[in-house]
Image 1 (cartoon, rainbow, N blue to C red):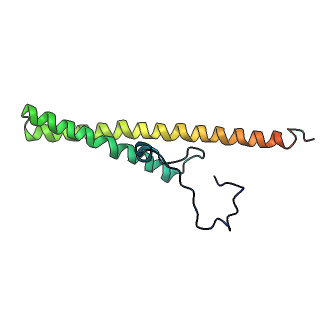
Image 2 (image 1 turned 120 degrees about the vertical axis):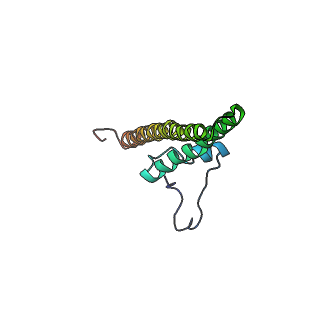
Image 3 (image 1 turned 90 degrees about the horizontal axis):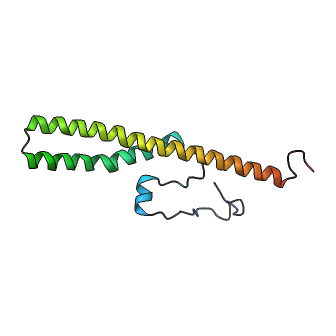
Length: 125
């Protein structure tokens, strides 16, 4: 959402960038004031999958190495771990996007309601 007090012509080329922590930048790099587009939502979901699933893979590799599991069993566990990681963290990312979009729509509705009441209410005045 742009600031209405800033003239876009005077502010040409200047973008205000919010500074988030590293974890926030990786998991949800958006302001949460507007609903996310499909592409932004997919970026969040893929980010969750890409950040957490490799941890599962590393844990499986360490566990199979320590137990001396066969190559076939290791590959099966890796495949299972990747599928489970994609499912769980993809679902978690989707849930995060869904909750964000719902909250953003509620915020927009509240702002619209305030704007309506600031102009004289429902029936005008």
